[in-house]
Image 1 (cartoon, helix red, strand yellow):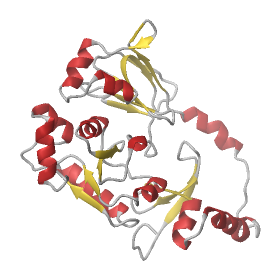
Image 2 (image 1 turned 180 degrees about the vertical axis):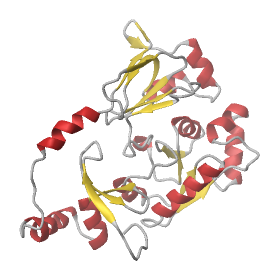
Image 3 (image 1 turned 90 degrees about the horizontal axis):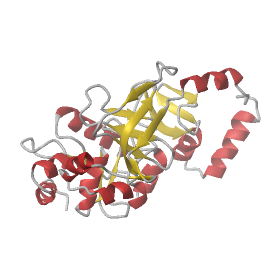
Image 4 (image 1 turned 180 degrees about the horizontal axis):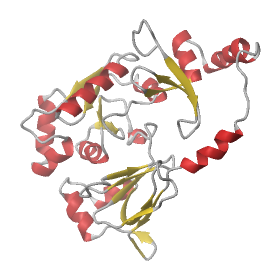
Length: 294
């Protein structure tokens, strides 16, 4: 149901998300679309969750068309590839603190230490991490400034703004949508980073942030966002950002025709946070008004 395709091909896989759902993947663009098997039936046939469960049982499990079985080989293998990310934050008397370097970095964006604490952002002094390709090799990184965003799901995203090779280290997934708990029903701005989200929030906008420009919004959240009249997708104003915003709008508008890709004029800095850094929040608000966001 994602798009028109006369030769549709997809596959179902298990264990691709932290919740280990059976999910739908598309051969055409090689992406996980956020559908569980239940979501696909609910969307395609207009069923309730209970009706979808009954359909799966009566048409697939009961006749023996599919078999449910444990897969001990997979269970043994999956732990080998768990991605590890541990942080040691700056602390004083057992409490997290922000050092002077943090103050200098975030004040450029008119973001305060109180807001960072409110948003569950940690200032790092040591990061330990491995990779999926080398799960048994533990790397250590000690760098300032360095920050970790913590999500309620238990995942983490480290941001090292001036590091060349490890600017981002993350266990977060598309399921981790930043700012979701503060969402309201006013027109929405969807952006692609914590910094952009926070400067927009500081100016009073209803906003959420994705893990990056390539992320899609999970299906359950797409359903919730139907309550909002207009959703503006605001990524970087360079070619990759503009293309990504258009692709996301095309995808989302298959469910709810109210997503509008927008971007700043090419003479401006690439994103909301850099406009505040180079100019001010007032200039950001004026530029948003110029592209139709009040």
